[in-house]
Image (cartoon, rainbow, N blue to C red; front, side, top):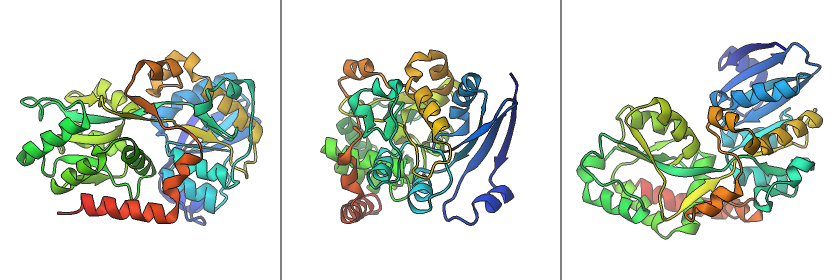
Length: 345
């Protein structure tokens, strides 16, 4: 079976297709199968490079399905599904809290199958939101900048290191701008619930003129280029993938608390092809049986044993608890405190 591969990237195409809507997209690629009789439209926060092996493997099993894959940030995905009822059959996001809100407020379809029934309870919610990866937030460091320093293994050690070496780290730390990054906001709010060190670390980073980023990829690139010495709360799956081809960077999982994000999928209420969406969900939640895909994508599948072995690993559980920091007043209060801390200088 042959697949016709072509991409449509940012530019005139997006202005025509999405211009009437308010949400912004980053990239699009259409995967055409010579035997296709239907199309599955996906909006996702996962980079094309990371997700493409999954698309091809899925089409090998389902040659009747073309896939129209659109990349957007987690906040723009939320806007597309929640505010504008955009025409997508599947929404895949790293922002578990926003996915939970989409389902909680009636914008997701219910789906069940033998594959989803086999998921652990903490990796699905109401048979509407399904986790299919478990990806930790890690520290990424430049090995050159740490040649004469001890690498921190806890947040307390990180705080002490930054306080003791302001001349080395001023302007050379990176983290998410949680005002614009849905994943960054998720990691930050979960950190604030799980460790007393979060606000102290945020204040220290603020005094050192920390650079703020939209996404993990940009932080990793700047560490690799020597523009910053370290990046905090980077998505571990992306960092490990880059580590293979980028000398001079090191991934450091912190031992005191390792937040683990579940990348999730849901079927929007307005999906035109929910049957194909279900096929893709089944494929995704069974990735633990496809080690070759895990290696190609760098996306670690749901694995309860891995979480049990690592005492520091704490999966962010799907459920209504994720909605707490999406309350308007709670969000405004958190962002105000964070902004005052990180931008204090």
